[in-house]
Length: 248
Ligand code: PGA
Image 1 (spheres, rainbow, N blue to C red):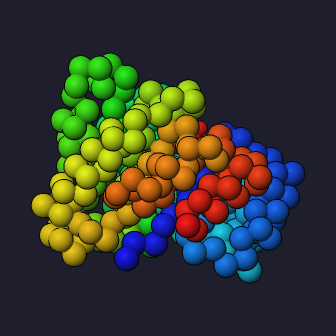
Image 2: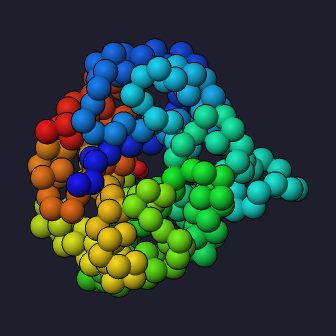
């Protein structure tokens, strides 16, 4: 049985004053059936980890460098994030692939670096609107999955987030049938590459405009094991409803 996962991606949002939202969220879910992970900006990882030391929320980061240390001004290593209290790190988010030209190979190296530091990697993949229109979605997803995920994947160290780029922050979502098609495809590819044991244990998240209104139906789609939630994770009241939906 894969434990459901609600992961919140705060992106470049949140000052220390936002930690009160985390306290409200934790108080509302003292013992959630689903796992709850919050990925704040790097500046809040340490303080959020402190706030969450005695509750059920786990902390993640939004990116890491692929190298362990060195002359990389402005970058943060996976080990630094682990040292600050993170247990997860998102790698290959489409906003980083687009803005910083991150390639599948870089994403794979970042995931490897995350594992070396003892972090679990949430590897993001997803097609653009043009690719969806050209009916290339499964080709794109298959290619990204093959090239972004390192060979040493297990159900413990890897989570895949399927995030159609055109659905992120737009209020648009694929049909439930389209979400199901992509998640079934990812599951089949993972089983083929890693064997049924590992392939069936990796959790697959849907991301892109998930909100309290659509979470319940999306989560019911087979092979959807949770959500990677941006905007709707910033307010405890919204994210709380998504966690409740995942608790079932
Ligand atoms: P959104 O973002 O929920 O605001 O669409 C999701 C994401 O980019 O992870």
